[in-house]
Image (cartoon, rainbow, N blue to C red; front, side, top):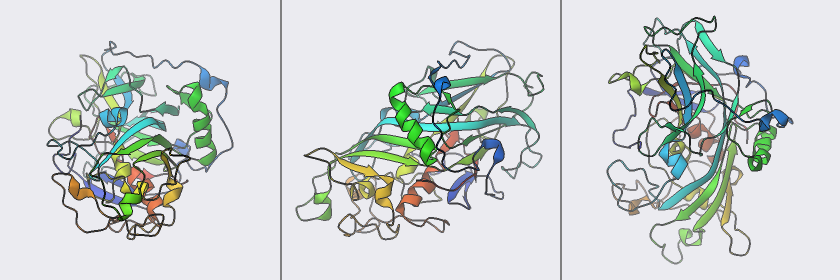
Amino acid sequence: MRSKVGVLRVAGVCLVAALGAVGCASPGPVADGGDAASGDAQGPSDASVGPAFEQPFDPGITPASNAPRTIHVTVSSEQLGQEGFSYTATPAMGEIVFVDGWEVRFDQILATIGDIRLNQPSTNPANQSAIGAEVLRERRAFAIDVKKMGSFVGAGGGSETAIPLFAMQQTGAGAPLDPMIRYAFSYATVRARGDATNVNLSREQFADYNDMIARGWTMLLSGTATYRGRAPAAGTPEADYSTSVRFRYGFGAPAEYINCQNPDNGADGAPGVAPRTTGAVRAQITFHIDHMFWLRLNVEDPPPRFDHFAARARAGAMGAPALSSLDDLMGVAPSNIVDRMTRPVPDRGGQTMGYTAPGARLIAESNGSPGVDDLRSFVAFSSRAMMHLNADGLCFTRPSGAFTF
């Protein structure tokens, strides 16, 4: 299970890109704009999934597969995405909790991954965005519920599992992969599309995925947040917040994740995936879901929070949980987070051991990031940087389209 011990997951720096994205990578230029190869230059679509979406998915590999010179491509939302975030006021060293007292569980975490590829390594290792000639490109887009458990062991340890996608076995020209080369591994988050390969979505999830297609979303998360912290004092703003919130957060934030660093390479965590002559190696696309709940940009591992969502949530019917969507954050200034009654949202993080609130009220720190116009775009910006390789490997992040909500 991933730990918060240590500020940076892998040596690197955070880079700010246009279109409201942040990437953590080695120094190098950041570009923006559409990418025809990844199919993300377009906006929302009216298309929907077709009959092929119901066909059973076969990744062609199992945990017992171990062919030499093979790279197993898998995906995981880690133990935190699969099991959710529990709350305790006295977290263990490295335990990730919502410091404002919330427990968060997910029903689903829908995403579309595409443009998975290998390239020759760069001749300029100081620039992570620089990669060599293309070796192999998988042109399918994969529709996945990354909350679901997979059949492979996850890269983060503990009870984490990973969902298999496919095996890389040959170059595009049909030659075996070379075990003497650390190939640059890259992928993209792309907008939901009707021709995507359905990895593990049930028929009950098709309506949500069709909604993602229509809205141009790359991700959709839904679940329940339950307040487990200290009871607020009467008359305070937080006393009016619901203690149970049903959330549905959908957004489009397409991006390429280039030349990812790989913790499996040892102490240096250098970029690249090298095949082995003794068996298969992994390339696990890893979602760090806690990014969505951060309130500081361009830094690694600020504490996750939910109060800014709860303070804006709409009342449910007849005692039902409150309802929260990203639209509830529209127009809210990151530097002036207010609840639905325009009262400043207090910083309740001080009830968690090891955290000291920097001030009386909650604020979101953009740290100079462009394109963060309101709290809704702030969340999308932070979420765009959640993608990694083999648990903690940082990728060079290049936006490939504007935010959509």
